[in-house]
Length: 456
Ligand SMILES: *[C@@H]1O[C@H](CO)[C@@H](O)[C@H](O)[C@H]1NC(C)=O
Ligand SMILES: *[C@@H]1O[C@H](CO)[C@@H](O)[C@H](O)[C@H]1NC(C)=O
Ligand SMILES: *[C@@H]1O[C@H](CO)[C@@H](O)[C@H](O)[C@H]1NC(C)=O
Ligand SMILES: *[C@@H]1O[C@H](CO)[C@@H](O)[C@H](O)[C@H]1NC(C)=O
Image 1 (cartoon, helix red, strand yellow):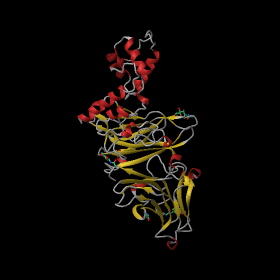
Image 2: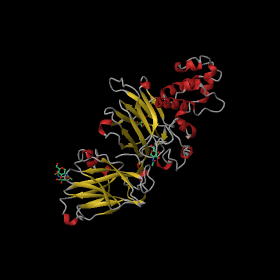
Image 3: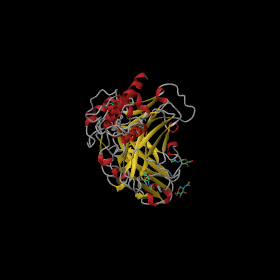
Image 4: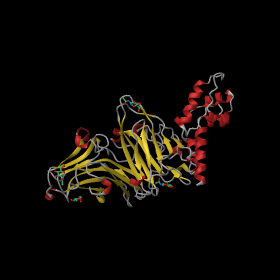
């Protein structure tokens, strides 16, 4: 626990000390003035700096939090103001991020890639969203992390291993007795501001991992939008769970920042992406390798088979259909099968009325993959969904599964699959096994390599 606390202290110093321009004094005064983990203090300092002139003659309203370190003569404030603030918009990930993550033993060349790189594991690729470093592979930077008073002695933040994807994740933890009587916000992590296209639709993803603390929740917000919450009670203990939320930028909204807050809970957080939903068209989705998994551009790399001529099947625009208004498909399109009546099994293939088969992806034998998708059932008697990799069945979703919830919602499915010896390519097959009249739909299919030690 001590090492965790000291890692937090290190992170604060490294964040605050970073980015000083040559010729300015990035000293104790600078760090006191611009404590990056506290954006509100940074903004107070920035406002103050705007009032100070080069000669210092107007500077009297020194921020109280800085006077211990800076004193009350103008010169040190002038010097510090010339340096910053730069913390919220860090663009160089190299040395700083290594020092925010003392657990790191590697020199991680990926960390030194410039932000425009398309190969770095530190950030989403520019064509697939502008939110940087959502995988925490190079530490917390450029995110801003805060533990709120008075919890700094009982709550800590760190970079932990493993992540859902790759090696690292962000982690919050209780370090001592939790003295919070009501609902307390312990910590927050805020992304840098990044550009979005006004009017465009986005998909925001992240993964959480809760341990045995069975209360509280992680909240997240996009700009000033109503927050979304992920409750520790709703998810299995010590397992990664993937989440996604839709977002549409309004007509004038051209930038976004997201944040997470921890209320009465500790968790890990990983694999954050924020990309146009159309970025899931084609073979380079923002996360994973499965092409066209959102069906936003139609079938794309998918192939459809429809043994039962009585059903209709295909990619449809659900936004145009009020039946789906509250069912939460991602984006506008999903793959849907509709059976007008009870199917005749003679027309089906082992009860399969229709199926989709993904494009082929490279896999490494022995590596672990998450197969994620959302499923929709019009009612509980319509049938079930089967998943195969190549021709081996790996999973069934029954509409009566508790994880599916009540009918008429797109609900998440998490499947962990390890590529067997000798297998170097994989294709995901999703089948609608229909037993009654009604609708089955599939959306948001992902295929992502995960850390070897991730448990399902
Ligand atoms: C999984 O995480 C561990 C650290 O906990 C790391 O050593 C290992 O390389 C990771 N595996 C993958 C496949 O990223
Ligand atoms: C659009 O979004 C911005 C940023 O969140 C917000 O300030 C503004 O009020 C929104 N405009 C409308 C018309 O909702
Ligand atoms: C789900 O449960 C209902 C009874 O509540 C049953 O009629 C139905 O067949 C079940 N669905 C499947 C796919 O097993
Ligand atoms: C299931 O839904 C279909 C149409 O959506 C309907 O025809 C059928 O009667 C429903 N089944 C039950 C048991 O409600």
